[in-house]
Length: 157
Ligand code: INI
Image (cartoon, rainbow, N blue to C red; front, side, top):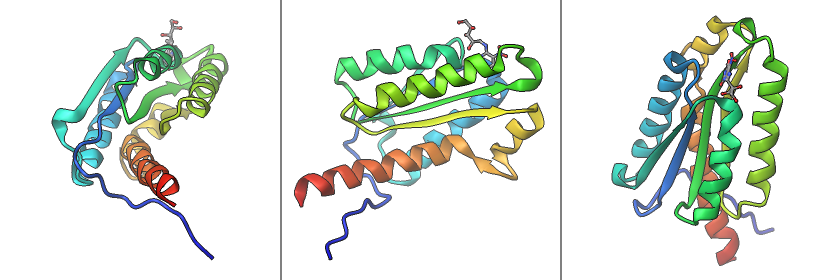
């Protein structure tokens, strides 16, 4: 049986974009840091990393769609933080962000990952932004690194 999978290493030429819905920026800045750190630690060149900031998670799918259209990127990592405690329309914003990222991602032709936190409390968001539950921005970046290599291997096999 031939197993085709991706490794967690970049070659250095990959052009990657982070899109950050900056609402709750105390959290989302940490997610961007985690994503950038993961990119560099896995062999990415910081000069090949772009960051687009949008007002909130709701706007992430629009920026994602335009970035895909531009054909400038090999992969795109989305981050943001929707926190129920302070968001009366939590369900609406989190659903639109998640659905929008999935919808654009499925036909993007490049790896897209979803690192948008959807939590009940700010404490849960802090836990996922670089403390006891890791950094979901870093995890979202690692995911597209693996998917980039998988995609290359699928084309080569
Ligand atoms: N955007 C977020 O990313 N997280 C939130 O918790 C949030 N809250 O609390 O409202 C939030 N709102 C802004 C939203 O994403 C849009 O920017 C806004 O609705 C304008 O379209």
